[in-house]
Length: 221
Length: 221
Image 1 (cartoon, rainbow over the protein chains, first blue to last red):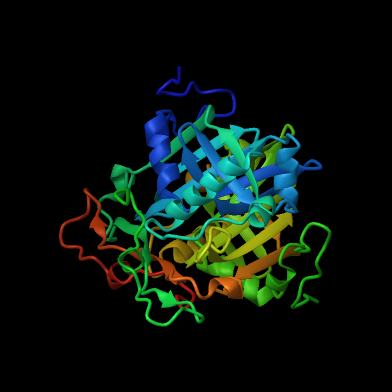
Image 2 (tube, rainbow over the protein chains, first blue to last red):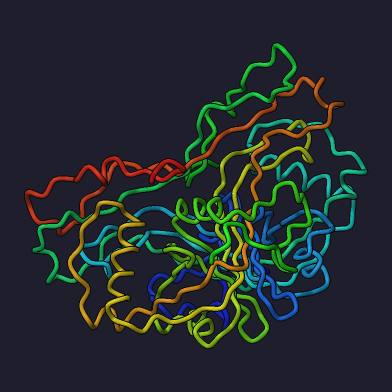
């Protein structure tokens, strides 16, 4: 049975600011679901390599994908341990000192090894899930066998992971409160601009609502 | 003399989509300067670890900072090689197939080892540079010696790095152009909402212009 709260391990126990640590699965899942991309770290020949890539979650697994020629994915497929970090920046924290400057953020860190998805039907379902995650409502044609063969899908279990949330705003010491300096939080979010049609768009196709009203954020789904 | 174009190495030569590779320093610097955070990867005991952290650039160096108790910074200080990746997501690319879905992005990847900044005056200048980078125009009080002592600053040279830019929008094969599917790019950017005053703000201090009009983007500076 899946635990609703993960047990911290040597790697995932948050030592700095432990009050910001969250091990609740649902809280982690909300961050992963809101994010467009993650940063995957792998040690290749002892040296770290970090790449950005799209990430989706289905149940208690995350999925990434890419070219079978991607060195980092090849290392993962061969069993190299991964650290996947998913970061959402929620605001600039403008304190009254350099020390008081910060950002509010939510960051999930996952430690896992990957398993390659072989089954073509499962790969086709994952294609659909990535499309719906990246651009909800967008309909695409079915993938071709050649396209599925040219894409590697990896899944990693969410068993060793942590979430660190900083949402406290300004934490200046009391002695600084009397300074004549503005102090507060500037909230940040990712916003979408007006869609640009593909140059080769078939005439007569209007920009759909899901593209005009695209948004990401905690209430996006 | 500093080269204006970096020479690709075994690690930084972009093999997949080499047409997206950029080795021009100024182009890399614009991406680093626009970004708020980077993801730093280090192999700790053979296992990768990736954390998000603020990054600034001065000349041909990038700087990160944090608590001297941060395991990853400690490993860097001890000479562990780092991979620092800076990613800006510029848009959702909605193609007509799963294979045609993508994102437009700019990503810098830096390989380097770090050097700890010891000099207190240099650390104080770095505090000011971080403040100005994170929140341009914001004025803070001078750092206290205790605060400087409690912060580790690391600098890494920009000598082995690459920039990968995807800005091509939809790249569907011609056979897909006749599909009755909308296709295009939804531009994304980071936008700021109305600033929230610190709870303990001294009465009478108004929200300054730099906070009300905060923005990040290619034209931000």
